[in-house]
Image 1 (cartoon, rainbow, N blue to C red):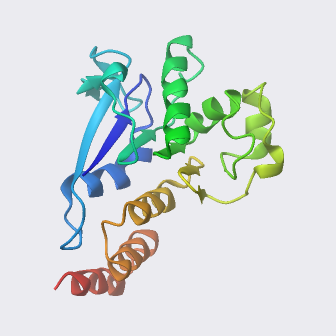
Image 2: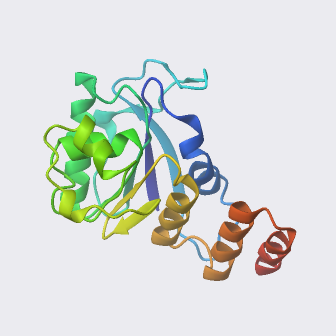
Length: 207
């Protein structure tokens, strides 16, 4: 059973999480022998937060409730509030995840927070551009490990740019091994192209 912790912070970029949380929570395209997945929102506390889209999220649990093990997954969404000091404890927890071999998935502004904490200095990663990380993360020293792709999976770290949400979701789903490979390929092809043939291919993988 995987527990997927979704960090909820003010100004969270709603759209960046949509693909991956919808699929992991619903399980609608899971293969028959897929491991169970529990999706939980986690916050600094259980106080409500407001997303960039104006939606209110009441976290299921606080950071102190997080269990760190190889079946734990941490999703860190983009937001323009990552430089607020209160979020440092979440970045420290991300470091614990990485050290324990647990999966950390960061997109957009969350990658800048990881970079500033030195967590990308020796790991292949991406973001909104290496210049972006140089600009917003004064302590960043991982330029030699930067990969100019929408999303990059490296061991137990998956990072993405603000435009990489779909590929990021695909790489996370693949890492958790909850879809059949042909289901995942058809799913990604359909949502990336909008072509009906891929939708029907997706449905056929489930029959």
